[in-house]
Each structure stands twice: as C-alpha cells, then as structure tokens.
Amino acid sequence: MTNGIFALIESILVKYSLVTAFAVVALVVWFSYWASARFTKGHLHGSAIAIFIALLAAGFCGMLTKGKQGVADIAWLSGVGLLGGAMLRDFAIVATAFGVKLEQFTRTGFSGVLSLFLGLFVSFFLGAAAAWAFGYRDAVSLTTIGGGAGTFIIGPVTGTALGASSEVIALSVAAGLVKAILVMCLTPFVAPLIGLDNPRSALIFGGLMGTTSGVAAGLAATDEKLVPYGAMTATFYTGLGCLIGPSVVFVIIRALVG
Image (cartoon, rainbow, N blue to C red):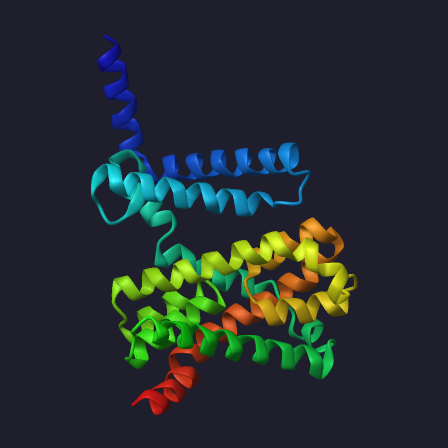
C-alpha cells in the first residue's frame, strides 16, 4: 500500500517535472532566506546560501547517479534542467534588460560608462589569463571562461555563440558563481572602505562588478536603498557582455593568441 502511494506521487512529480522544479527551487529559496535572517542576520544573503545549496545538491546527485546534469538526472527533478536551461536564461536576460531605462544610467556620466567598460574588459581578460594559466590555448575557450569571470550568464551565452565545449561552458558558469558568491559575501564588509553609501557609488559599483545577483544581494545586505542603482548598471553589464563577448572580445583574444 505504502509503495503504491509513493509510486503514484513519483509518477505525478515526473509527469509535472517543471512544476516540481519550481516548487523545489521555491522551497530552497525560502529556506535560504530564513537561514540568512535567522543565523547571519542578513549579512550572508539568502541568494548566496541558495546557490551554495544548489552546488552541493548538484555534486551529490552527480555522484549518486553518475550522470552529467546534476539534480536533473533524477527523473522527478528533470524539470530543473529546463528551468535552468538556455531558453529561460535568455528570457530572464531580455526581461531584466527591458526594465532598465537608458536615461537613468546616463545620469552617472562618464564615470558610470567607464566603470561599465572597465569592469567588463578587466573581467574578460583576467578570466582569460587564468584559463591560459591552466592550459587553455584556443581563443574560444579563453573568451568563454573570460566571459564567465564577468558573470555566470555571459560565459555560457558567449560559449554557445562561439561553439565552446560543454566542459568549458561549465567552467565559465563555475567562475561566475564563485564571483557572485564572493561579491554577495564581501560587499557589506568593504562598503565602508570604498564609500559605497550613495546611489552614484552604487551605480559605479554595479558597473565594475557586473554580477547582478551578487551586486543586488551584497547591496541588500549593505543598504537596501542602493539595490536598484547597483542592479541597473549590473544589468547593462550582463547585456553588454553578451553582446561584445562573442564579437569584440573574441576578435581581440584571437588576434593575441592566434
């Protein structure tokens, strides 16, 4: 009787795997924000905890199933593969970009525009330098991993456009996740040292760091009023990175490495 009930529940979860994925992600996010408020008083943002839980779950499920898609290799969690796939990722980028007004960004003047381009190119080339140090020599891999050093969205978008291998794209995502978590966790501590206490500095900070989730979470733990400003330039960063990564940056890196 009990086995029959569990089999019925599993069949429903598998049949509606995308709905199951939304429910599981919502549960993880709810727990993460509760843990953040309960145990860290908001200093370690819920987004950072949620990403950490997701990485642990992916690693554990990978060892358990011997698969290559993390939790998506489990039948009733297969919807996570679609929820976190390229289609919904690109939809999120477009939806976020539509919420940004160019005239608001231009109010930061030259310093805001400079921070955006400086943040992008520094991230790309530092990421490419790290990839070179670990033995990657082709322009496609260097550009893709460099994009991941920008954000975990720019990396896979760039890699997909250039035809990078799944291994390299995965590395770019990992690089972006590490950066996002570091920005989330360290922003409240460095904010007093860099004068991150007003909208203008938040706009410049978002342009330099770029990772929207990291900047938003870090600023939320610093001063919630600064979140829209940092997130706005960080969103431009992501969109611009997806545009110039497979084009301008790739051409430059290809010219440098041959």
